[in-house]
Image 1 (cartoon, rainbow, N blue to C red):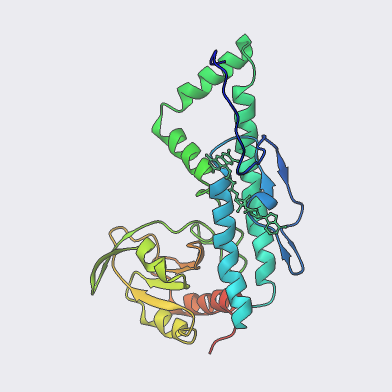
Image 2 (image 1 turned 60 degrees about the horizontal axis):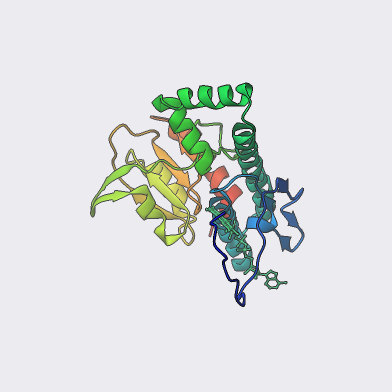
Length: 251
Ligand SMILES: Cc1cc2nc3c(=O)[nH]c(=O)nc-3n(C[C@H](O)[C@H](O)[C@H](O)COP(=O)(O)OP(=O)(O)OC[C@H]3O[C@@H](n4cnc5c(N)ncnc54)[C@H](O)[C@@H]3O)c2cc1C
């Protein structure tokens, strides 16, 4: 290709890399847990590392909960349920990329042209961006009451706190569950305090709050959200159920 001879010397490390489309049927089998390339191989570039890191972020806090003895029954199984679903989504769009780059016949050229036209508009572009980044995934959240935010990746809101301006991302640096009270709800803070050896409670204000409170897991997915002005008699038992379901029995 280059028209010159390239001398190949002693290799210090050899590996092979080809496109594959494979996903393990189970990410967990007892004490065996699969993550990263061991769990999935995709047929397009630029996504495998992200997918593997998100597996690790999903699994790490659940393993820690198990090691520290507060994991509720079934917590480790949610690793398979959530990340297998995410792997299937990644397989979906990487397979679509295979179809997009395949062939130079008029039909293949037309498909690429139509796709390119679609991505000029901001809304489909954002949607594709979220799909490729894996940030559009919505995990099933049993017991969440079905709030639109439950299961989604927490929005990175700008927060006004007593200590100044912060972001949701900064609150997650401690890698611990967070109850984020956005509407000064002492009823919800009082409920979460029974778990305060595990759950960090923050009170803040934000413009256009999406909910009265968010219960955020250490992997930044929302376990439960209180609707705006949701009365205490429905919100506190629902919060208690979500706290027990994800973070075990209270202190
Ligand atoms: C050339 C190339 C380009 C890439 N480009 C991109 C890119 O642009 N974007 C992207 O997102 N991804 C890219 N990837 C994919 C990305 O590198 C992998 O998805 C990622 O490294 C997988 O991480 P992992 O920890 O799951 O597995 P690995 O990084 O493969 O780690 C597995 C580790 O386990 C060790 N191991 C294996 N067997 C044993 C054993 N029996 N005992 C102990 N240790 C063992 C291995 O030595 C290795 O260190 C690329 C990969 C290659 C090869």
